[in-house]
Image 1 (cartoon, rainbow, N blue to C red):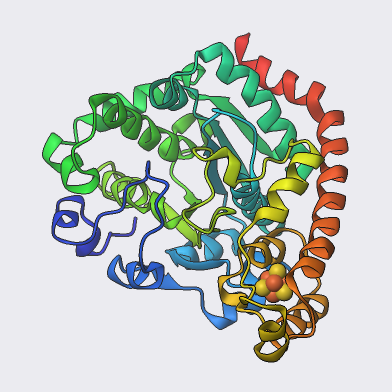
Image 2 (cartoon, protein in one colour):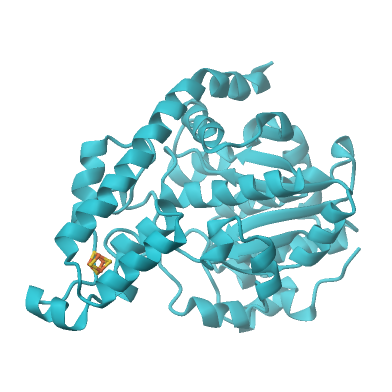
Length: 377
Ligand code: SF4
């Protein structure tokens, strides 16, 4: 069993910066937060090893906690798990796709078993959806995962409300948590969200439950905003004599307005994987770019690509060819292309991917329904 560094212990969080996992605001300086929370950067050698994934190649996954012990266990053919989940408050969007691609990468690269939680209890308290509405959304979410390539035979899908081992674990873990600890990590939150946190702790510990073979290394791919959950889970795992969960952290993709992280809370500023293609076209063509005030100026000094949300989305989701992406980068920054033409080209590629994905998703709906309904038995 490994020991969490002192700065990770929950009560210490009160003195440092605090991130709100329920907010859609972007932390002001993501890199600084990585440093302050003691995350390790993804090294060049790791990046090289994971070169087949654009998420690592393009530095979308930036940092980790204890990824190396997880890899070592996997390399030694010990059982390892990847834990992830979704609040079934709607369909998958590009942000959900990014996390899904990461778990699928680890599943394929290491034959790791995925535990995938449909967090219906959290969607119920946080978004006011009925459990039945959550079940319906969950079918679409699982269909998206199947279409993205998850290996259903090596995945345990479950709904929080039906997985009593999780709620039992949450009760058990609650003995280790005080209101002061939660306030130090999350601030002043309603009891319902505090309960949702404990249930999430149960989710993260589930792969180490005796019914699933007991203690093992578990990797949780998250965005930086979820780090409070990771820190708490490591603290609790330590107290419960379990293996401390490992985590990888990806950077946020801004929403289409360039204002905050892409989230379901601003539907006009995000793209759903199931969205009508005409609606995607309209939204994408309105997305923030790094275009200059006049065409002449742009031809002269090039576009401000570091502030171009359209490019950021395109590079993260729709262009995996490094040479082609480099050419677009050069054309933009040398003023060889203007935003209208550039966006039209990027959009065409995005629509092609979405169309194909939607066809695959539609074919997966029946299978997804069976997977979700299985827990009714
Ligand atoms: Fe973005 Fe393309 Fe405009 Fe460059 S030319 S700022 S990449 S839309």
